[in-house]
Length: 500
Image (cartoon, rainbow, N blue to C red; front, side):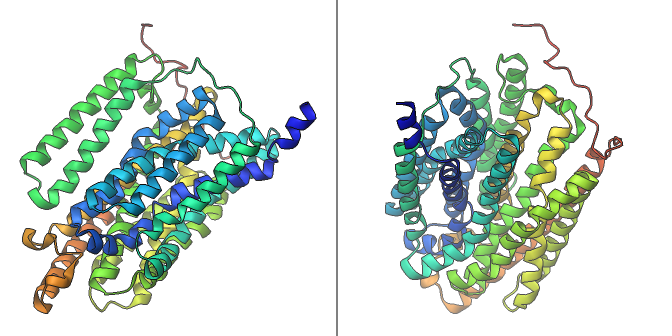
């Protein structure tokens, strides 16, 4: 019977393939949807704020639930949560493809994101289980990690090709066969492993994180309509501040904290968390507003826009290995600083290029700078977070930096998107992505207003990248050991408070 069971089990390579397929579709939706936004706006008569929520509803939910999804995967078992994630993600993708309105599309994106949250930690755990040998596991995890860069790089051209060939709904159809194949392989040959029923969950902390992310995203998106002094905007930022305070108090008292405040006593850990947020505010916000610029201002098709922006994400892919080598030989500080400089220069250049007739080659050079900067961040930030923690806590570093990247993703779309859209008169917002009812003069006026907004957004992105550079200079300046590694500070193994 043991031999029969072993024969039915997936090989390590097939397990790795299934894990990579799941990660591919869940991260592909971060970029493939951007290319389809103008067509979604026209087809669903959605305004700029609704298009922001089409992207941000997915990113906010991932930011809220990613760490809890990892805990649930440990508690209920990898196979069970992996299948649950695949099923919910596939159902959400189907609902997205059938949505008749912007509101239903946004709701379906939330459902899709819930499934995607479970795919990331459970797929990594499946890979770790399939490769018990340390060296082979490291290589397999490297392949798994490269899937994110690959899906990010292929997202714009794939999305553009699908949109011009089959329409915007096809960017969600593509997920369905991949999900079906992955579920069939898992159900037929992946053995179930018992979960850890004693793994605690921080429900209160999770609730506070959700309130923080939703309120700050709503606040930034509403600034494009109500301004920075609008009642709703001020209320949302006040709610965000209160929820952040509640989260800090809760985490100090929690038995199984989602994110213990004691970790932030480490300067490298804190710096890595902050730069993971600010760096991806710049990158993901850029991807959102640049798609609208290429298609709505320059008039390119989705396919051409996807090809033009492809160097951004391909630059992200190609520098990943270079960032790993630099981190290994020079520490995390140098690649993070290079990344921040590249992104600040690229954003400053784009602030001067968002016109109707800027040369495409100049745009591509700026795109390469921003994409290579984003690609240089992941490895050194995770390494810095781990180097700033004692050995018994390094396991949280990857989850924390991933979560803060998701926070940066959602805030970037909300902040830079609102800055770009704020210059368009409110009376023209609803027709921004649906220009059929506008005359030539009115359309030119809207495009020029949007171009001014883009300039403000890119100057803001440049400022955020420069701020990230200053934080990197401060955070990663610790003394090094003889091997060149950053020496971690001595942190208490537990929060220094009385039990209970």
